[in-house]
Length: 332
Image (cartoon, rainbow, N blue to C red; front, side, top):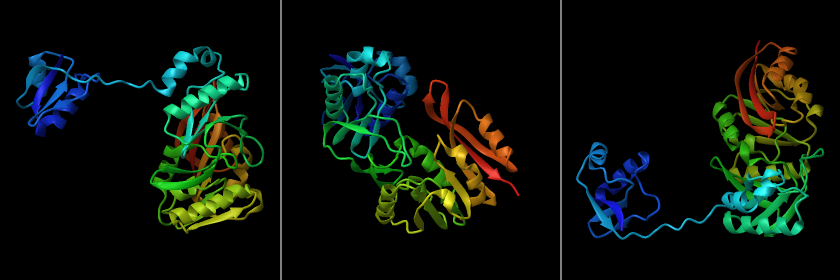
């Protein structure tokens, strides 16, 4: 038998939230009900405490409740079953979900049979249609990585949903990071109706589509697969302000009030070009990799009068380095 609060059904949700907020809800059991009352499992028999929190009639009763059987998560099983691989940094607990595909981080040093076993485990525990692992780092002019299929469907094209829009992504042919969803939302929220956006390394267009409030968006990429998918994404999301451009950015002559430089590893090599693109009084969203912000600030200040509007750490890149973003206002 389990201690429960017996409350009228109309009060049930309000009481449940109060118990949850105060760590008094017993999460090991399911809430029960009859025709008039809910029976909410609790972690205390203290009437005075409950009286101080809950305004209304209730009764503490014993009731036979069904226990919640918790299925262990993929991460929990990795931590328990493959702890040695995790400790040796041959297996990462984190993973990426792009559309209905999962991408794991497992070292080549892990035997193929074990990699397949982990892939099947992910397929069974994470809602998805296919599981792959990163076989290489991002490399080459097109910024793509080799992948190894581990479980489920062996296809790399998917539709990824974020921030109320959808994107065709081919994880084998283009670079795409689902971990930048919040950053794309942030930049999109800064765009106004008079902005002309230059997305210097657009990929399939996640930043460009996030900037759909702009007057015009130039979306540039050197990867033809990315541009073809970008065209499909323009149609899919009906953002016809976007002009897809297949080119090396160094060969173009454009102007805009907002420039996006989402090429963290190599963005420092394109600062001069970004300064050519941006209008005076415009903003450059500069993504880079470093230990802190100082090197990036010194780089821009050595080239132009500017002011930092925003700076933040996005995620860890290595033990001592981070993916960083700095928003520079290019002053008159």
